[in-house]
Image (cartoon, rainbow, N blue to C red; front, side):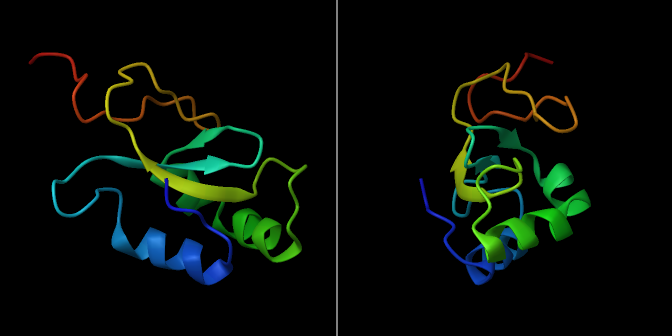
Length: 94
């Protein structure tokens, strides 16, 4: 799990997009309190996230600490939007 320690780390992770390369695996952010945030939520709440990183605010719920691939959790939900976060290997069959 790549750590996000600085605003630059967050910006670089966000710029790289919602899929890991190579492989195209779906990514999501993890906050200091263990919440999962989708890229959609991170984009909408970017200002709060950047302030929390700047201030090292681990109590607000916006301090992003890592980015991770969702390998097999077909039920992973964004804790902000309540939308399902895509997984690499547990997608429903079409």
